[in-house]
Length: 150
Image (tube, rainbow, N blue to C red; front, side):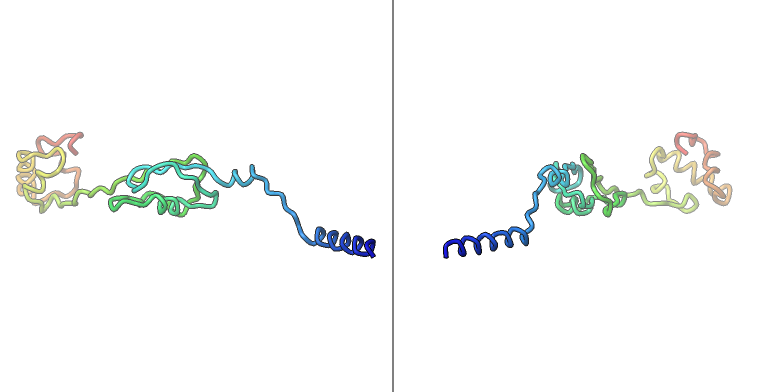
């Protein structure tokens, strides 16, 4: 009777081991799916992040938390991260308003980089004498505007 119980137990254990698949987890392979990236700039929590190989830049930036003035317009948010990648999120900058040289006031012209009140007045004087500018290159004919200012 004991032999029967031992034999049945042995058969049961054999069947269990044959149906249960035992997998070895390769820790090195699991580690290779994680790597570090660095997020800097206009984020709430700049720093080094451990990320999964499948994460996109957008997902990591969501973890870092974008500031209100973060400019992501030149960042491909759908691109996957790669090991040791550094993402710098720039600050949004107000673009200068475009003005028409044929209708701008002296104050608007004076607000341009490299143009003071006297050059602004010369632009207006030239514009009035010549019924406006026909091209931007014509600005070079105004006294005080050279290659640097143009």
